[in-house]
Amino acid sequence: MAAASEPVLGAVPLDEAGGRWAVAAPSGVIILDEDGIDVRHAWDRINRGTWDARERTFTLELLDEAEPLVLVVPDRVSTATEDGRDGERAVEEKMFALALRQRVNAAIIHHASATLPDGRRITASVRRRPDGVLYSVTDPPVGGGDADRELGLDDIDALTSLEDRVRDAVGLPTT
Image (cartoon, rainbow, N blue to C red; front, side):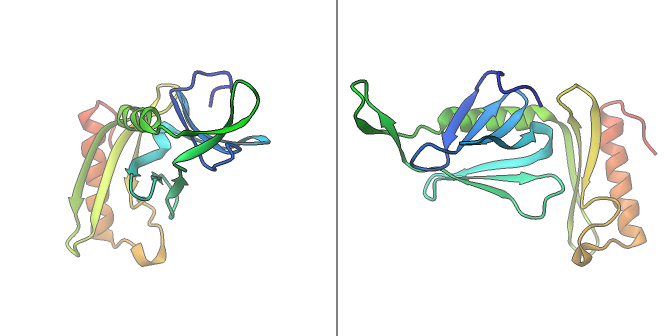
């Protein structure tokens, strides 16, 4: 990911004191705390992002992660006024949400889904890395995954076929 000097596309505080922030940057989502960068997630490694206004949470579904990343956004954040007194301001999440939607959509070049005979949904997508390289991923991964999501030979064939379809659609080599 790019250096900390890259432009901010949107940002939201993750605590009322303003000590922890989620920043949408050209390279991805960066979580900052008082010590600096805590974690980074490139846009191509995010499957989906949603905003729940009632709960004030962004939920990011990450590739290769069983649990989503949940970002709780306070409705107000502490600030200092011009005369140095403590104050508060309302948190505006719109620019972060817009950047999240636009950048995740831009990183996923092509996507397809299908249903296995047992009813499970499978997906394959072609994504663009920050360096511009295209690659494909499947869910569940072709190698299987969690024990409760093990794939039989017919399932692997269906998943491989779906992956070949999305790769072929964008001109990438297939198996």
